[in-house]
Image (cartoon, rainbow, N blue to C red; front, side, top):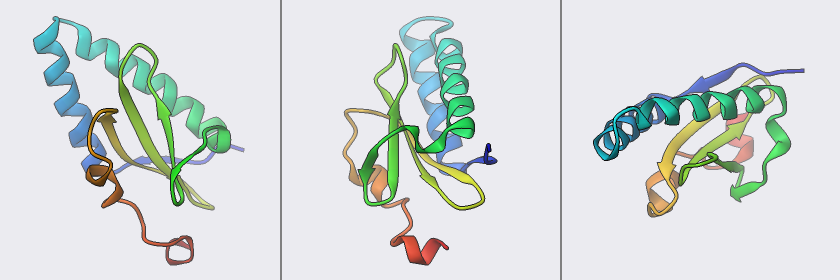
Length: 106
């Protein structure tokens, strides 16, 4: 059973910023990033519990060929992507986006 996936506005902004930064490094790299991200998001929709916990109820998966990590939470009726950030970023930059407790989210 697949769940609908929601990309929070903060995560959308993360993706846009990453694309801009990657295109500065090399033209077209931002597009490659988006292709890899779509692959990961499709897998998350199909099997959300596939990846382990990074912190509390937040799961994480790294994009192939990139150092970016997708941080997400699985709810009973949906998957919410909290952040898509470079793996070297300080954890507090995405942890502040996470729901406080599992019970609070249900």
